[in-house]
Image (cartoon, rainbow over all chains, first blue to last red; front, side, top):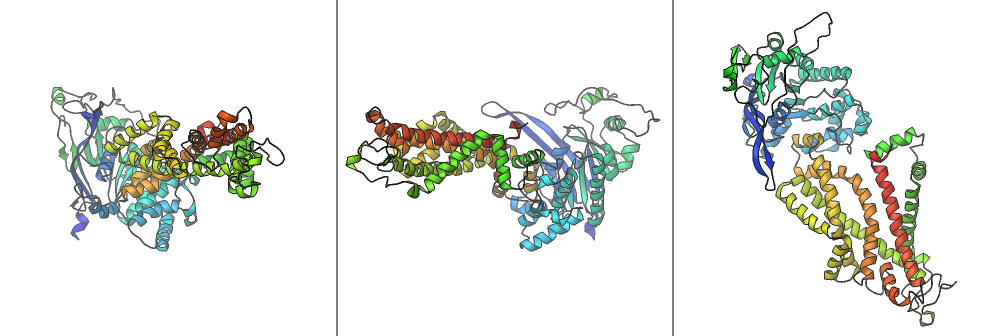
Length: 324
Length: 297
């Protein structure tokens, strides 16, 4: 099958600029460059970890891929089909192919609906007609994610945070998607529950050949689940490589700094910490040249005027830095 | 969710949450004024429902010999100029008041919810236009607005209901719009969008049910002002036409001429209006506290 090698999702030069409006006439006075030209592909059964500080645009990127937020420009191909120009109706079959799991297990479930109704809703929307058939499918999904089918009639507030997240996962699985965007899916959970949910996600991936776009700021979790990692800074991808390379041979100064901030559970190990100075610049007025030069310990004159392109410096390892 | 939090509070307090009656008893102890309001409202509704059983005589039957009769064992609350029994008229008046209160509140809420939901969900120009319209309506006091409406529509039960309903719309639209604005950004709404659900269906299925809690409270509070507005309109001759017994009209007919000679014609309809509005307000206040988690400790 040729399809096996075809990436599930192919994102090219994706941009999302939010207009900043001011005054009575709501004139546009500037833009928030939330996502400023990112490209990546995710293969069948693969996980791409998207990491970065809060405000770097990783959540917006995930939403734009799903067209929950309309991208400003760029291309998103799902199974080879361009989806950015599609109408609502044309988009529907592709919606079934890509789903999302949210960070907050509380606000992601409608408090007025039962868990069974929540998980069954995608089936309802996509015309799984008979009630009995829907219920059977929902019961199967409940069992698959580790909930009891008897809990279908309970309301979200009757579940714990971890169980709620399982409901969210069951809802995302209902239509049999190929890609699931996880927007910090475990960061609101206790550490012990995080591990359970991560394991569930990995089991499901193996079983159903799922692809994940896993958005997180938690590098330990990302390292565990991802095959590839893209590091984002201020709306752009600054480094992309397989998980091993990122963690053993980080090339971008920002990646280095991020990794040195990860705690190591061994008091004997003393590491040289690279603590970044200053804050992330405003995405409304990103600095010229390399976005990172204002905080980069190695910055040279060239970094302030010329934006470094994402270059391949080793097979499968891309970095956007003039110094590599 | 607010209701369910309250269940937890009940359970903590050791109340038997399962029984409806024990729950009511617990709430009554906690909100005694609300319970008083609730009792008044229940009495009011029962009076309206069983007016034909309670009233000793036909409220429309005149009796020239009993004109302006003082309260006695025959005429418990006296009789008016035309000799109609005041007690019967007040009992039947509850029907008018209830019909207007429920009718106007229901109609006003229906329109207000539709406008608020559309306005909050669609945003943009539609929102801007409807909000400015609501500003204009809200700039006028409820009574003034209802007055203008009633005067242009002419006095009748239906027109009174419509006039008061229109005046209620802005409040409702505001409340629904503001909850809609925050709800439409919730992840569960995004999830519905992610499965390809249509916007109208999202609005009705996911947003609307979550705007209901504050509306129940608002509705109770508005019942009182609807009753009061009807009484005021009828008092001014723009509400319920003769010969139907409206409390407001009874008050206005007698106020000028008979307040000295037959004060019971003024006092008793006034008491009926005050008591009912008082009751709905107490109940509304208690409901607001019960539904608002911040009001609890």
